[in-house]
Amino acid sequence: MKKTLSKYYILALIAIVISGNLQAQKYTLTYTSQDDTLDPSIQKGIEKIFKKVYPKLVKDFNKNSQKHVTIKIDTAYDGVAYAHQGAITISSAWLHKKPEDLDLVTHELMHLVQSYPGGAGPSWLTEGIADYVRYKYALDNKGAGWSLTPFSSNQNYENSYRITARFLLWITQNYDKNLVKKLDSDLRTKKYTAQTWEQYTGKTVDVLWQEYATNPEVSI
Image (cartoon, rainbow, N blue to C red; front, side, top):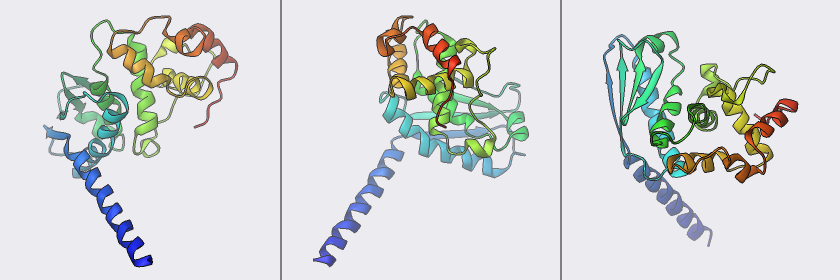
């Protein structure tokens, strides 16, 4: 009996591994770099993030996301990174300065998954969602020295990025754990309005922010 159970257990594990491999093979990555002075570990790290994170984002947020992604390391770009028309561009200068900050790719991959149409909603929310996703799905935020921005009284929910992301985290912990997924879906289908917050929490975004400002504690 024990041998039979062990046999079935091993077969189940094999099935899980095969399923995981097939899931990863659904999505392909083209990586190009104009900078041959970057450490080879950077490409390996980016490919690892794509393989592990992108399928999860597609599954959890937008099953119709593109199956092929291009990531380009650009020596001329003087920003950090951006996503546009199915591709991600990353500054080689930034990777030289912060080679451990590879999970910026998680943020940019989420932008590809978001694929919001023009006029879908405010940019501060788009970026806040992407940083919330980096907080939840990234492989090594700690190694990058990246974290959500602690609350301070001079902030506003429209400050975007990590400030908005922390506010979203607070709402998921106090009102609706699925709020970010709902907001993401509404933005992609152009259903988002100023009343959306009240629809899901019973309160306006301004009232929610006032509550957050009074007690901004979150479980990290």
